[in-house]
Length: 283
Length: 253
Image (cartoon, rainbow over all chains, first blue to last red):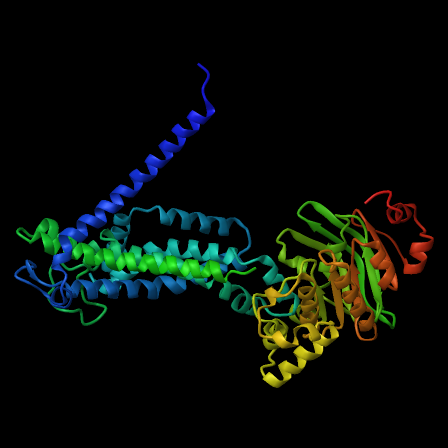
């Protein structure tokens, strides 16, 4: 029998559609189940009070604050370092062995499992640099983890600025640094911002890197300085789900919901920014 | 030694991009206030020569060269800083490249970077350069709209005005009219002829008729070599070399 090309096409399209739907389903179920089971836990008190009764009651305020501190600390380290090295790599670095080695290292850094970052942070920041388990050590560890994200997205954003802008600016006798400052960075900024927000959501959601470097099992007060331990949402979720018996289901799912809302809203911000960027891109 | 009236001298200039030998032993003296046009088929090294003069080839990591270029008797690699050189030698590119800024800010871009912040002076520069580039009347009411909204011909005149705004001595044109309609082309040419008393101009063009219309002297490049350089009228009436004749009469290129 001769194959009918139109029937083949229908089969192919159906397969493609099914695969797409199968991809959407888990996302849908995750969101649905977490909202269904966790929404009733969300209250002003849950968000703003400290955990009580061995985390079986009360709120998750210290974990929210800890996560926000960690994200902020991560950015303080990774943002300048990542953006500056991306600028260096795209604008200044010659194409030589060292540069290629650096680029290779960045790509590999992105592939390192997060628990390895945790172990690395424990070895370097907590023990060797004697920072102890602290917000500082955790931020540094998360910072190293998100560096490749920031560098890669920033590099892409810088590369997407047309070469002709640089040529025009240089041909007017403008210095290279001013050219970067006034003719390249402003047009790359939205792209860089998108990378930063992706880095934030990664830093907010990871458990393994903070496991050995900062996260406190139970700490019913807010940290006083960067040398204090802190609770953090992902680790708190792990603790109340597996380490503490008899925690109400809705508290666990409520915590997951809060974490997810924080990460999702950051991702949403990234998407909105990116679409703004595309609208403004007029060359 | 440099003779009087010489503005720019290339001496045995050899240029390579990696292993490609792009310019071969070019020696040219460019006279003050002349319009020199450079013609030749694609890949003959015209643009490479032009971009050597303001050191724009340096952006290419494969680029290396031998020989010397002198601006007013000073070696452009040893005696002048790259910023100063490029301020003195402006360039208009083949495709109009307005920066994604307003008309005003496009012109003010160069002066601002060179330290002029006074709004009154900037306005004066914008009006003067736009007038010189025959664009003022068309854009004076929309100085603060995006330069990208201008037509192609207007954009190219904006680029010319932007080049004028940093007060160069020399203007390089790299096929400035290749994407323009005849009327815009005529305006650019008119501006070029008007600039003669003030600037030294070098025009790379694929349009031999344009070279004949505007330039005092014409150089013919072929495969990276300078084949012939003569007064434009001589070149177009009785070229000395057979290759030039063949090119001008359309037998190749």
